[in-house]
Amino acid sequence: MDSKAWMELSEKVVAYTYGRFPIILVKGKGTRVWDMDGKEYIDFLAGLAVCNLGHCHPKVVKAIQTQAEKLIHVSNFYYIEPQIELASLLCRQSFAGKVFFCNSGAEANEGAIKLARKYAKEKMTEGRYEIITMERSFHGRTMATLTATAQEKYHKGYAPLVPGFKYVPFNDIEALRKAIDPKTCAVLIEPIQGEGGVHIASEEYMRALRKLCDDQGILLIFDEVQVGMGRTGKLFAYEHYGIEPDLLTLAKSLAGGVPIGALLMKKEVGEVFKPGDHASTFGGNPLATAAGVAALTALLEEGMLENCQAVGDYFLGRLGELKDKLSVVQEVRGKGLILGMELKKEGGPVVKEMMEKGFLINCTMGNVLRFLPPLIVTKREVDELIETLGETLKKL
Ligand SMILES: Cc1ncc(COP(=O)(O)O)c(C=O)c1O
Image 1 (tube, rainbow, N blue to C red):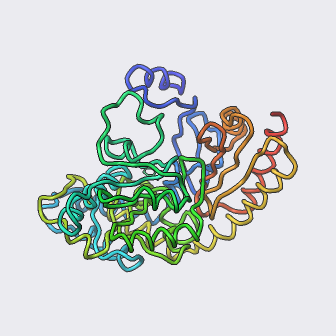
Image 2: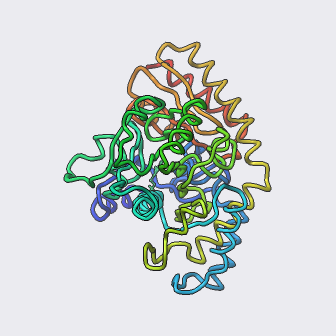
Image 3: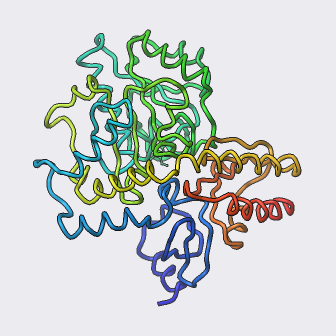
C-alpha cells in the first residue's frame, strides 16, 4: 500500500480527533525523521517534547529489547525491579521521596489532584478541596484535568465539568492571594506554559507563590509534563527558581518515547496514599520503566542538559535576530529548548510550508510558533531552520 492509501484507510477507521498533516513518518534517528516516501525532516517538535534524547536513542532501544525478552508486564501486585530503580533515580535527582507511576501526563495530573484532595481531608482544616490553576494552562484531557485546564476551548461539549477548580491569571501573585479561601487545598501550575503559548513564570512570582502556599498551609503542584526531563536546560524546571514543589508531574520524555507518567511526591504527602487508594494496571510496568532508567541515565551522562542550555541560548538569539528584521514577529521567548515565536498573523501556514521544506515545527494558540527539538540538536541545525524560517516569514 502507498502512503495515499494508508491515509485514506486512516480517515475511515481511526477516530477523527486530530487534524493531521499528509505525511506518514516511518523512521527516526537522532534529530531526523523520514516519511514513507523517503523524504527527510529535521524534527523541531520531537513528538511534542517526547523525544528529548533524539529518536531511537541506542541505549533506550537496547533496554527495551533486553527487557522485552525478559519480562514485558506483570501486575503491581508484585514488586517490579526496573520500577524500583527508576523511582530511586528520580528521588535521588529531585525533591521527591516517593513516586507513583502511570501512563500519561493527564493521568499523572489526575493522580496529583486526587492526592491533593485526600491529603487535604486528612491533614488540613475541614472543607478544603478546591484547586487553583492558571489562565492559559493545559493539564490534560480527562474530565478532571480538562477542568483544571483553564482554556474554555477544551471544555466545549463536555459540561458539566468537575467541581472544585478555580482559575487566576498567570504570574499575578495578588490575584492568587485574593483567590485563596477556606476551600483551597492546592495550587497547580506549569513553570512554563507550553500549550498556552510558551509563557515563563517569573522568579519573583515563583518564590512568592511558594511562600504563599507555605503561609496558607496548602500544596504546591508543578506540572512538568512538557518542561521536565531536561527541556529547560535543567533536569526539572523548578531548579531554575530555587524552590521546590510538594508534588510534581512528569510524562512525555521520561521513558525516551515509551508511554509513561509519574507523580513525584514529597515523602510526607505521598504517604497519604495507602494500598487501594490509587492504581493503574500498566503504571510503572517493566518495559516502560526499563526504558525510563535507560533514558534518564543517558540524559544525565551524555551532556544533553549542557547542550540544551548552550544551543537553547543560541537558538533564542537567532529567533531574536528574525524578530528585529521582520515586522510580522511580535515576540520571541522561552528557556532552554522550549521556545516560542509569537506572530502577528496565523502560524498554521508557516508550519505547513516549513514541513514542505523539511522542518517539523508546531503552532499553538493560533499564532505562536513553538520549537521543541531533541536536546541533542546542533547550532548548525538551528542555523538551517532559521534560514528557512526567515525566507518563509518574509512572504507573510
Ligand atoms: C503541561 C502538560 N500537562 C499535561 C499534558 C497532558 O499529557 P498527556 O497528553 O500525556 O496526557 C500535556 C500535554 O501536552 C502538557 O503539555
